[in-house]
Image 1 (spheres, rainbow, N blue to C red):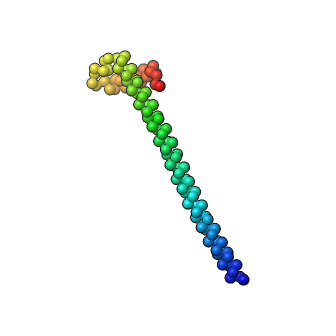
Image 2: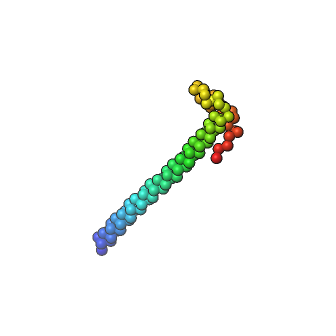
Image 3: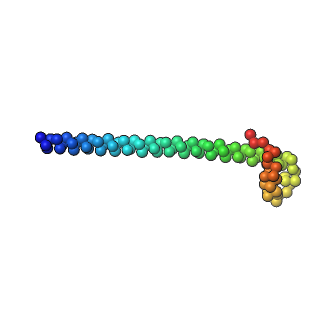
Length: 95
């Protein structure tokens, strides 16, 4: 009788361990999936922000070249362009 109960307890304990390992695997898979979607969302946001910055900066430089032909003609005017954009940048609208 005692041996029978010990065998039952050992079997049930083994079942519990198996269930526990299965649950741990599923939780780990779920965590990796959540991390994947988090990374995808973060990447999408970074791409949107980069595109917005690119559009805005190209619009600003187009406006800069339109309003000041001096900047177009001078090959050494990169610093001047940046300073001009920083100084007068609030006049330009970025869509």
